[in-house]
Image (tube, rainbow, N blue to C red; front, side, top):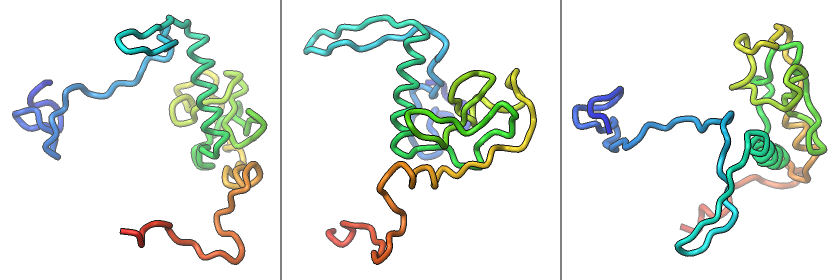
Length: 154
């Protein structure tokens, strides 16, 4: 812990009084990783995976999350000629980059810093309509009053 760091007092405490042991850092995505194979008491089996396998695992997790309705807001789609609404895992509403050849995270990977960036109008997408198309969930169903369940139990 470094005392007196940014947003800290002399004792190294954050404004809310919590001692910060280590600052958060993004995990490296372009380096090999470690896969947990099996956990047992006192022993863990692991395997070192290459960058491509790590990328595939991250994509599977992201596609599962996207498939459950977690998609970027329409305002987050990049204004780039290479960006379009992609079809992944049977659904759309995902920012697909023609230049990179894959689904991208628009907040991290798109913009003037990208070598394939060509300024244009953002694609016309509606993530809410895509969620409605893929799932039975409806925000405001007919004949139902919306309320948070369980709050009256306490």
